[in-house]
Image (tube, rainbow, N blue to C red; front, side, top):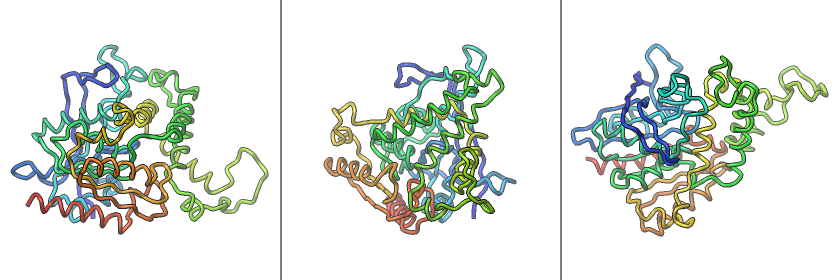
Length: 375
């Protein structure tokens, strides 16, 4: 059963310094909250979102029954992250296209949409912006920070940038950095967008067009990497579209998997911003907390003081269990408290969004432990 929620927005006049050396001022962050902040403000949990998600983490908008948040199965009354016990915050990242200031918004310096001139943002910049919003809400310390995939990278970064403000961190289906293959997938997707004739160097808003072809291909590429081979074969196999026979053509859509990917890509191109896609995938590429320590994860996590939960999925080949184990080792080498679950699930990277009983049980038990600490 879902519950009604209301999106909110908070504006910030003070410039936010960015890792690129640039800064952005007069920006807004969209966010939502669920549950009630307790008297000593100790039960707050920040949920960080992945690439194409947003601050709408749980619940639904009044009068819109199909508007459930992207992690509604995880968060809410009586769910693994129980909003009867915790005050949960979802914040839309700077540069997104779902309410926070991004490339689609007006650049105060020019009076035109930012477009390609929007400054490059990193995971660390997002965490700094989130910290400012929490300051404004009067939340000094988080009971936990939680995220999957790119959201997991943000959770990791919270424990490094603000170790004194995070008591627990849940890092799900994530990694300490992207390997070359992942960067390659991101680059191919970006090239599909920037070579679309309707992209216009990122200033397509001025031309009244959207680079839908590029966005569609980018989403198709990404979607392939989110699914496992087992899921693709079980769901689609080599089946042709209903009623079709092989037509011996190189351009028509014949196989069901082709139809499915086209559908996903077309749908994505209707609501996601091309410049935002470029920004977020580049933030993924840049994230590498060990880089400043000669590649040593152990050294990078010396300053982390949180208690960690890490979860991986056996068929996730984009953020494989081996990457989570790297993090586990680095944390154990620093004698940090770590719980690790490797779930044997067939769904690939998307498993972190789905209702696997063992996965949900692990997260529920972990938050039960945090609730007992707060009692």
